[in-house]
Amino acid sequence: DAVIALALTGGIEEMLLGVGEAGKPLIIVAHDRLNSLAASLEALSKLREMGNPSWIIEAWTPGARKRIESILKGIEAASRFSGLKVGLIGGMSPWLVYSRPDLNSLKELFNIELVEIDMDELYSKFKSLKVDRDLMDKVLRNAKRVEVSEDDLGKALRVYQALKEIVNEHRLDALTIKCFDLIGDLGTTACLALSLLQDDGIVAGCEGDVLGLLSMILGKLLSGSPTFIANISEISEDYISLTHCAIALSMVDEYHLLTHFESGIGVGVSGRIYDGGRVTLLRFRPDLRKLRVIRGMILDSNPFKALACRTQLKIRVKGDLGKILEDPLGNHHVMALGDLVDAVKSFCMLKGIEVEVL
Image 1 (spheres, rainbow, N blue to C red):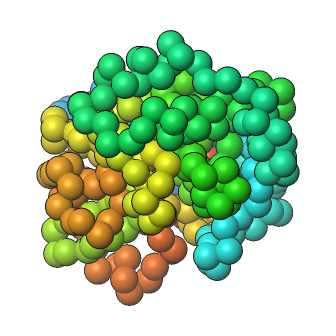
Image 2 (tube, rainbow, N blue to C red):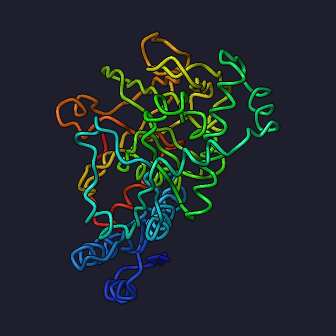
Image 3 (cartoon, one colour):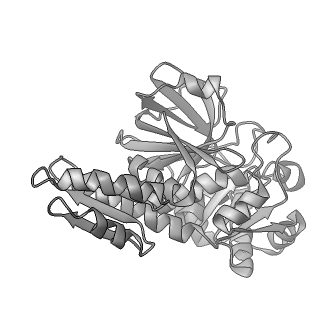
């Protein structure tokens, strides 16, 4: 998928251009003697002018190997991102007035097939299924606190089982669902179902937000772990608060089963993360030609707001968070585990996407 070239001396500019002509992304590893860096800079300038994705890694700097690995992750993600089959169940929620992807860009940039699935297909499966008792016992056993009835939990798990069947029958790589319809039609929510699907390795988003789902897919490809799609509930000088009622159970140190915040019914997941690890926040612009990236660290995950969704994460950020208010790209942001900024940059270079790091 890529070439790594060690620039041993000066005078190798044309050789590097020759390697670049193979058409593969090129990582040039330079050192601090024998004009290695000088030749690499000259060659990289021409490679970039030719449209060849290429990078210089300074071998003498701390973290050089880690940066190479990050770039390779981005290259691999760019390859695996193409040709995916994504399910849109029930359409997009009406409040997504801005967050609607350009379908031409979806096909042109990523060759992603968007499969629209009627909500009745889900309802039919839901009504025919019986709850998996072993699954219910497992979810209850691992929960730190449970404030919902077994009947409500059973409904939420039947939604999960129905969505799992849809994934298998349509051979979906990912899905997003217009989940608020379930509240009135089935008397339940999709929050727990989406959490469990993510644990199964299936990227699953809410509210029919295809744009958010794309960020979730990218975050999973780069991190190898589930991601968290969330509302922005607060922006301070040095932290941002993210809240939602669904989070992969494998992402958290403990979880509580509460009701869904907005409706007070069904099952919402309150997840707590205590390790304070590094995270990366992602957000595509609707035309998919720009990706905003925010590097941060988890500060707190205990609920600190009564009037907000059940999982609440406070993320410390060193960048200019005022940019989110001055030049917003919509609401939903996706949190992926780890510092993925270098990997995101290489992904965006290969896809011709502008990347903005806050």
